[in-house]
Image 1 (cartoon, rainbow, N blue to C red):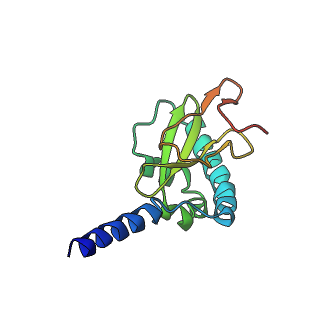
Image 2: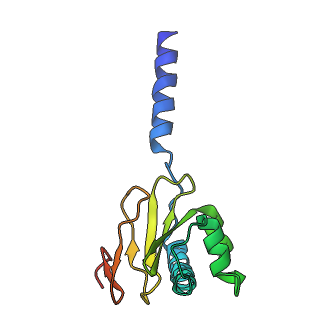
Length: 143
């Protein structure tokens, strides 16, 4: 009886440790998401450029407003993740995180023409990029 309980506990622990904690995108998915992120962050950046004051709307509302001219920019693939928006006067920074909002996947400044940060190793879902005057992106991946 003791051995059955011990074997059950060991099996349970092994299964729990080997199960993926989050559903990180595959390399192919990352490629597609990267392109979509650059396009979406650019749209949010353009939306922010037209604002006369700091936005106070929710991230979801900002994304809806920024993509109202082209709904395809808010691709259905993003529904599997959490998208966060940050206003860095006057620039936009977007952060894509795991569905549970714990882990960062990629981050992009809307004013740049490329994806600025791919997160390969586990990192918390927190903004790290800083955009300075003239779209100087600090914290971006090396080119």
